Length: 187
Ligand SMILES: Cc1cc2nc3c(=O)[nH]c(=O)nc-3n(C[C@H](O)[C@H](O)[C@H](O)COP(=O)(O)O)c2cc1C
Image 1: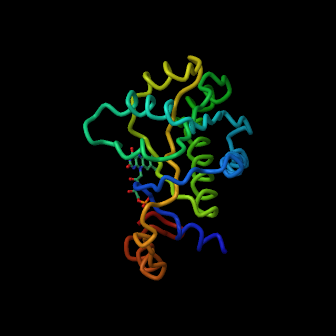
Image 2 (image 1 turned 90 degrees about the vertical axis):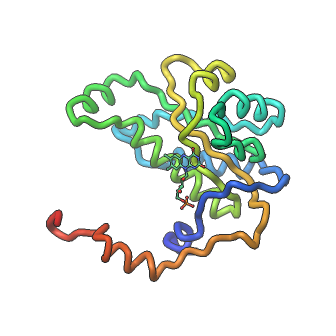
Image 3 (image 1 turned 120 degrees about the horizontal axis):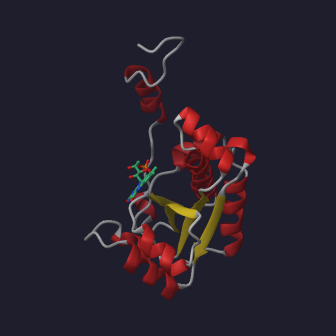
């Protein structure tokens, strides 16, 4: 499969079957994450894979307190909690000068690798950015110098017939008509 085919194949999955995910596959996703580029090669990440059902349910109970929002996550057989080290001196110094949060850029790249590797393995995923960080840190005893940046809900899609097919030709014309791509000048 070409990279573009893989990128096209991926979409957010929010309905999962009961089929469990093999830990070897989780390992492959974390390997993909660790291969991501990182500013100054700091690789600030740690990933906690939650596949114990009771712990997962407790995590979801505490993490999602806004009614209805992200309530589907509890049905994912595995949840990855993506954490970033935040007190990296050089990241902080250069980040302040540049006005960029380098650890967040690093984390975005690594999480993208996780969900693309999942897709390549035929596993559905949904990137989750709305959660109660404080509660998660307390439950999982995550140290103060780490930030929970995102969660990733993982599982096999419940109804295979719901598979979304993205139209690459439409996308190609969109990058032109919506001026997502610009050459030589911002216009
Ligand atoms: C940083 C980030 C945070 C997100 N947070 C959530 C979330 O909390 N809940 C959710 O259902 N989807 C979340 N998503 C998934 C987006 O809604 C989804 O990627 C977008 O609608 C595009 O759809 P697609 O992934 O199917 O292409 C998030 C995605 C990103 C990149």
